[in-house]
Length: 138
Image (cartoon, rainbow, N blue to C red; front, side, top):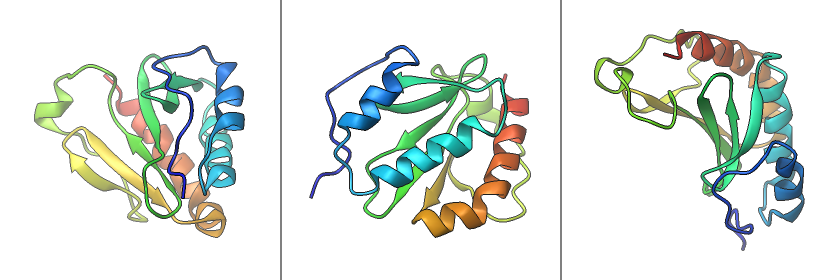
């Protein structure tokens, strides 16, 4: 079974995300595409590119990267940029009333998405969380 394999890429232009997804061999490829649409729809300021060999999202800096190595579904790693900053030491308070975040460190969290029904059910809460996350960016 393929697990998120595609041609190795470090960073590409926005238009290459479509090409990356078209070449992606992943059991949850449609779910990854739906997650991408949901993230981009959270705020008009969100852009995208392939960074860390996965669709990644940014405003002034990168804040989210699609997690393609999950065993079931897909995920979204939320972070505060490509470089370490003060949040790595202090942490940040992000409202998460629906319990979407699995904190991996003070400056990183995972949102796991099991399937299309899970994404649909939690989509509005995820978009609200993404807007809060963007506001907390340094």
